Length: 226
Ligand SMILES: *Cc1c(COP(=O)(O)O)cnc(C)c1O
Image (tube, rainbow, N blue to C red):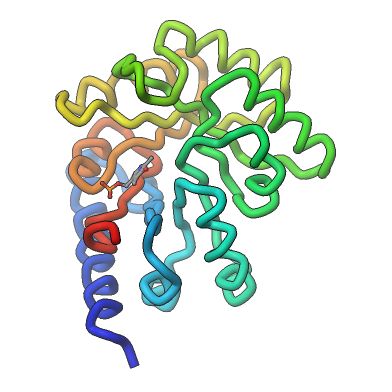
C-alpha cells in the first residue's frame, strides 16, 4: 500500500506530465519531444518507487555519493533506468560517476573533460555528455562562460571525442530565465548540438517554449527537499 507521501508524489508527477504536454502543444511540439528528468536528490527510494511504478525511468541526481547509496538497488529492479548527473563532478569521483550514471550533464572544465575521456577509454564505454554553460556568468556557479563555450565544445567533441549531446544551464535565480534559455539555444544551434537541458520546477513551461529537450524537475514532483 502506498503511503500518503508516495500518493502525493504520484499525483504531482501526473500533474507535471500534463503541464509538459500542454506546454509542448502550445509551442507546436509533441509531448515526446521533451524528456522529463525527475530530480530526486535528497529523496529516498520510497518516494522514487511511485514514479517507477508509473513507468517513469529518467532521473537526475546532483551528488555522486548520494546517488551511489540509492540507485544501484533501484537499477537492479528496473534495469532500463536512465540516470543523469546534474551536479558538479570532481575528477576523483569520475570513475564512480561513470560506473553509475548514464548521462553526465555537468561537463564544465577541461580537467574534467580529460578525466572523462580517459575513463571512457579505459572502460570502453562512453556516457552521453552535456556541456554546462554558465549563461549568467555568475562567479559562484559552475559551467563554461558563454564566450568560451564554442572552443570548449570543440575541445570536448573533436579532440577528446566525448559524445557531446547538448548543453545544460541553470539561469540566475533573480533574472528572467527566457534570456538564458535563448542564449543556450543559440550556442547549441551554432555548434550543431540538438539537446537542450534547461528548465526546472518554476520555469519548465517557458523552457519548453524555448526548445528545451530535457527539463529537470525536482520540487514540483517530490515537494520541498528534506
Ligand atoms: C535541484 C536541481 C534541479 C531541480 O530543481 P527544482 O527547482 O526542485 O525543480 C534542476 N537542476 C539542477 C542542476 C538541480 O541541482
